[in-house]
Image (cartoon, rainbow, N blue to C red; front, side):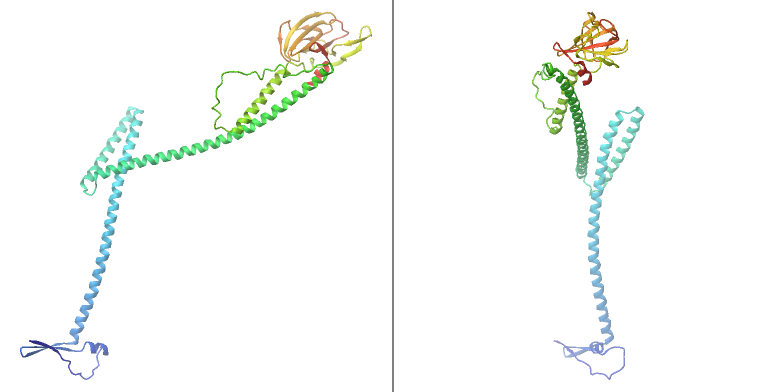
Length: 412
């Protein structure tokens, strides 16, 4: 049986050395006694050996910790590199799929463009297509060598990229179309505002013209009422005559209702204005000779030949012989020639009950049955018939009743 016995040696006298008190006690010389079969063996471990063992253990501990740290860092670096490699591979596959997709789109575009080009351009485009096919074949060869590239995945990604490109193109086209629609809507709104402004100005002008015509007709009616007559320009109006097949108005649906109402209102006023203007052209308004002076008024007067009281059916407008006489309204010549007391005379029927007579003329330019228009010259001032000098005897009749021509002359 072996017995191990540890025996501390007696303390030596204190000597000066470089070790501290704690280290001297801890690393003092140590003995290990081994007894076996009646024999005893003593093993001594000097402080130097203890220091060497201690330093060695410290170095091994530091090296182990450093190795573990390096292993952990290396593992993280390797994981990171593998992840980056996977991302790089995926990016490489995406890049190739992008190239394939773009190549397909460009090929289709080039083919369409080539069909409409000259033969030389077609040859150039064919050469381009061949080069592109060579590049695509090289990419296929690269992918075949790499076992981590799945051709099916590449095809699927290419199809997906193509679909995404078409989607992006559709989204961009939709965006552009929406911008165009918004721009058109702004233009329509601006045009509608501009049109509304124009329609309101036309409405104002039409109202002014209609009010002026109504005022003129009112002045004429003042003279007519004195003799029991009244002229209504709407009495024979055809402006309300309507008819035709019913066709639903679908064009105006969805439009600016305010604008449509203004359009209807304005065009109604334009129609009224046109009708009143047409009616006014049938009323003899204004002076039939450009320069004149009133030598004999309408109504009661002294006869210039016998000095007796007489009734004058018109007015005498003294003027130079040969001055042009013009009709003051549209109408039809019902008489043109010589009449007793009137000399050379023209009678015009203007319709709506109005007639005019022009007497003592020097010359007549029109014939019976001829249609005349406002402002047309029908003859010359003269001194024919029962006359004391060059002048125009001018009469205005409504429904066969003589009216004061000066009212009509001044009403224009």
